[in-house]
Length: 486
Image 1 (cartoon, rainbow, N blue to C red):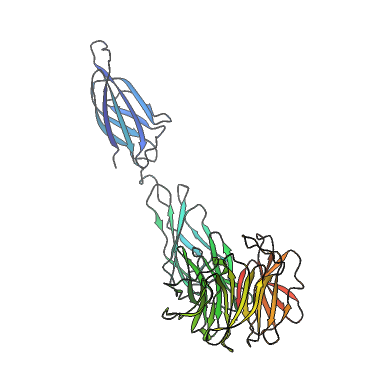
Image 2: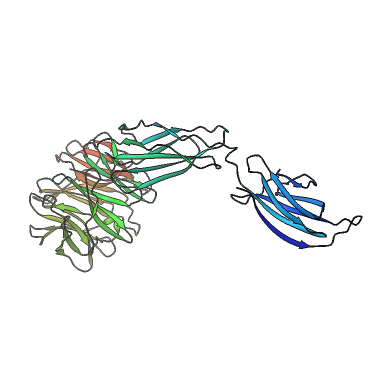
């Protein structure tokens, strides 16, 4: 491409020398691609006058040039040489702007990237991250930048990673049991980009999802699965998903997710696929979003959730909503749990200030049966039925601390016996200054799974398992909360 030339004439006075009319040529040379000044460009004319070089601002001046028509030549390494016509008027200054185009004939493009790892078609191992590696060579040793495009066969997500200076990148939070397609683009900033062939790899097949739990990420929460050894992601980074509840009968997980300004109930398969929003017109609502608890009922045929003072049942297949129970207007339902054997329900309600908790038992028809606990001081957290429906487990800050921040100082796990209305404290071995939260029974009812964390409200949360009979506890998952184990 020849250089583009802009002519602007500005008149001024010039003296004649010996009756010969002369003028002055002033100009600036820039890169046609981004208009940056080019230093050290050699500028000359034909017929010949002077040969000059542009300064660090891309400027040049040829003085005392005879009034005539000239071909101006501008050349610099790595750019196409320019030949432009210009007329020097007598007793005037002629100004020009020359734009030089990079020469792809001189600068060779890099080689198309060759994908190195993972090998094409391989199923990668179950690690927290996958390293993608490639090779590309530039003969002129130009500085190369790369971009990587990544997509999969399970979602419409297209991930693009740009401005990579190295020949590898670490990728984490990939979906399980998915086929991934990836391609690398190399750029030297001069020539057309070079693309690799498309590579394919597979992520590990989904292990048995024994436990689902939540981890906090910047900007939201992610639901993960756990197979007694490894953790694997079930929901995406860019979604705020939390409060998962497993159901082993229909092999599904019900959970909450923020959608705009509302919170809604979703369901998904154990492998994180077939995610579907269930609630629509009547979203879950409670004292605050963190207080909302949900429960499967009738072996996975419906889901219970609170909407202020109302308890709603919804069919996950057709989103049909049914009012189950309605409490007083000055009460708000927070937690709910259903027992498939007794077909009874327990709800936790609070006053409009979020405290003064009450635990209520509903009968098989969802009607009020009796109050189990009332006027409870401090925050009441999770609630869970034993398999036989004769006991329930809940957490409570037994110090009775109440603040707008809902901070807890001494949350304990408590088992309540519905047959004799007695209560057992499971947190006798809890260290001082820590809270036991998010408690539920293990599938065999011999253990409880729960979260233990400092009461400062900022420290890491760990998921522990404690044997009910011995009181022995051990860490199962570091940096996790809201576990569900069925």
